[in-house]
Amino acid sequence: MSGSKKKEVPDANPTPAEIRVIFETNKNVAVVGLSDDPDRYSYRVAAYLKEQGYRIIPVNPTVSEVLGETAYPDLKSVPELVDIVDIFRKKEAIAETVDDAIEIGAKVVWMQLDLVENNAARKARDAGLQVVQSKCMKQEHERLQRA
Image 1 (cartoon, rainbow, N blue to C red):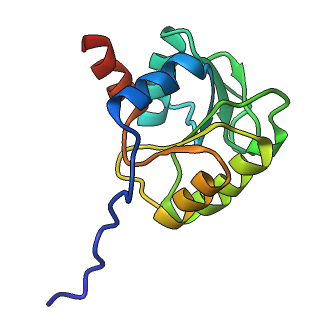
Image 2 (tube, one colour):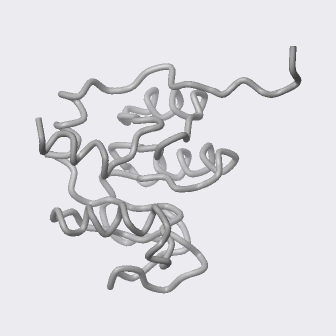
């Protein structure tokens, strides 16, 4: 038996129909860890969502603006309603980001592809938020457009 750590898998995720409702009813997306580098996944996903009519709110303490939108250092600094918190951070930062999402009254926590943190997900669900783990918002949106 190797000493490698077993990869965590989501304990639950919304159905495709529930994901469709998330996209249809939530338009303000705070992208936590959004890079201003066009080659980064966070940038490409945010650019796609913006093209689809979503309001993108960059959350990254190291940039002042991304995609023509003012960036904020953390979720608690965002001065407007956040519907979806889309997380592009290391696994170690997810719990704190989920706590902030709960505190600001977000409706959905979305952990990007390969991001899973079941303890934080349960905490968010217990607080009334919907949680999507290890799925890409761009890929899921594109899939629903084709369905």
